[in-house]
Image (cartoon, rainbow, N blue to C red; front, side, top):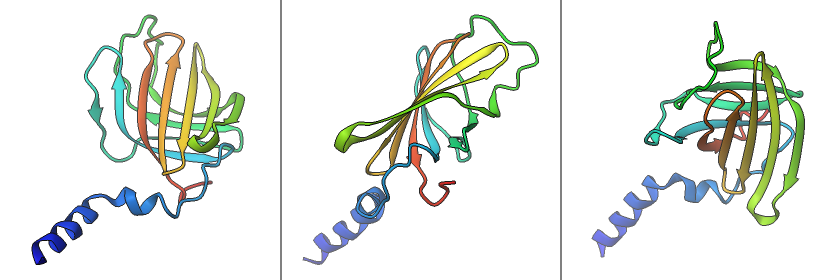
Length: 150
């Protein structure tokens, strides 16, 4: 009997998301912060990311710090990558019923336009689809962080 109890305790400790899903607030489509933990490029293998990457939307501004892997069709000169804080344009939010909420917006960093689709789910999980105007699309996943909600 003791062996079964130890297994349950160890298993529960390895699955923090089970307890997280019970007491989270709903995803705020107007103001959110997504901590990105995984990226899925089109032409390369998917990989786990280290701490510190994310996308946030607050006060009609997008704060982006993401890695990118993919084919770039028109390189931008003097480009510092996907690290910027710029105004978000055409922000559209819609409810997906019990599944969560989806937010679509675009950011213009001359000469490139980045289109983001962020889906926040009830359990705290989030998916991001990024479509740059000069390169291949890429997807990310992670968790929206209610403690860091602006």
